[in-house]
Length: 204
Length: 75
Image (tube, rainbow over all chains, first blue to last red; front, side):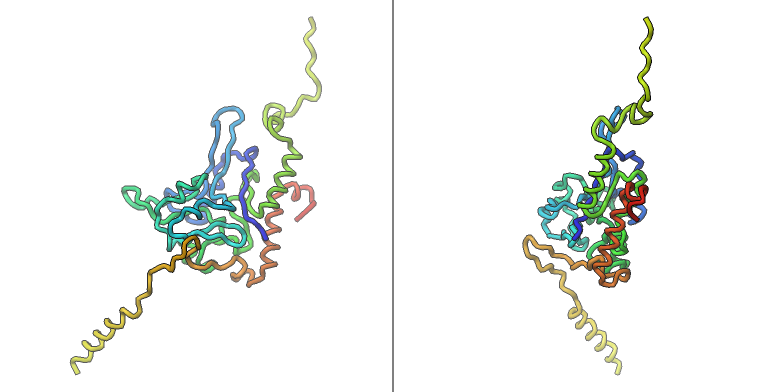
């Protein structure tokens, strides 16, 4: 049994925002709602790091715990989903989520709250697989097609990985072993190659 | 005879209330109260073949490892 998770490799993410665009396009997400976004820490400074963030499909999800109408559920594969027919748009899940994943459509002139919208791990929602209602409310169901979330599958540097947590951990572990970690993975030497021989000392 | 349409209309209106669905959620604290979901493997693509679905997902999962793809170790 898979436990679906996302992992973003901060050493590889180049802040291209292709994951954000792919998600918006695939699910026809309305204006003002970003199921996924890229966060950059120390922007513009040497060693800046970017991370693609969306719902992390927590094992013990705080959004599920605080929802007053209990509209959240977890699939057998660990994907956290919700029933939009039950959601009252109160925003408790937004306050509880440490990643800011729940989004609320700005449907009115005064930023009126609508039904909560969030990343579905491309797994649709509680409607028939590939039904019109499912697409309208939750977006495309790629999991039912035997595919993984589009944001991860189309990531050009493979910074963002999605799927079974155990497999993702193996992939990341192998990467770290091959490339090294910390200061070894960025800097002049990594970008332009290490000098083959040491520069000669100036003669005095 | 002229009364028939009015009687039929009245009956239809009276019966309309019977067709109203309850909008009350059967609430049980701490438990998911929404509609049941259909698992991913029950669609047209896999036709309840859960093992096939898991194999497909695993294969795509492993293809995210470019060391596997470039070294020819895997698919």
